[in-house]
Image (cartoon, rainbow, N blue to C red; front, side, top):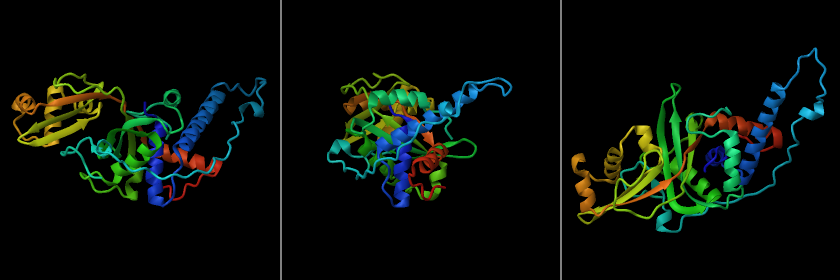
Length: 307
């Protein structure tokens, strides 16, 4: 499952591109993210266990002092390029089958504790391979969320390279939007979805479960092949039924027929559906910025151009 550390890495890659520097490695971000929240948790536990001033306490300064933080090793890496057709960027809400190249948790985010437990299963090296999507949203002061870019791949990629590549591809190359400028950074939230449990293609367009499965469809009409996908959270966010989701997804792929004839078009086009799973995890800019300032002050990680 994706974690908030993955989202922090997406922010790190985007900010580094604006600042013309190398981003931290995923392993470094992961380590610092957990140290940051471990210190926060330790501080809260000390505060909750504090005794009144008129009572004696056996707690000493040594007992509550945060663990020492070592300086990060120096690493650098460059993103890898996708090399096969199945690893080409895929937009989750475009009308084409493919495209060219604060610590609090909000909706769609995981808690530090769940992030820690998730990383026990995914590991911390960044070498695990996953199909993945990176989504950028803008958030208004009134709390309204608007899509700003969402592109991913169904080809399993090494996590570090995949997140770095698609954090930037989603920000700069989603053809539905203009590239994200650095001035928009404070309004953004990053969402990462790691895809798992992909099924074999089925002819049944309703062989999936709302709220659990994302779906990827393909069909051919009059010599033209159509294809598109929705991540698992899309249908629930929109309040769609399964039929409404299929119609919307077919239209997203470019089909322009009547919504009442979708089933006939599906059958005529020999439609195929692949279902998959994956939970989107999100992080707001302010949460990333607080962590990044802490990283700079604690271990000397540069935080130039932080807004």
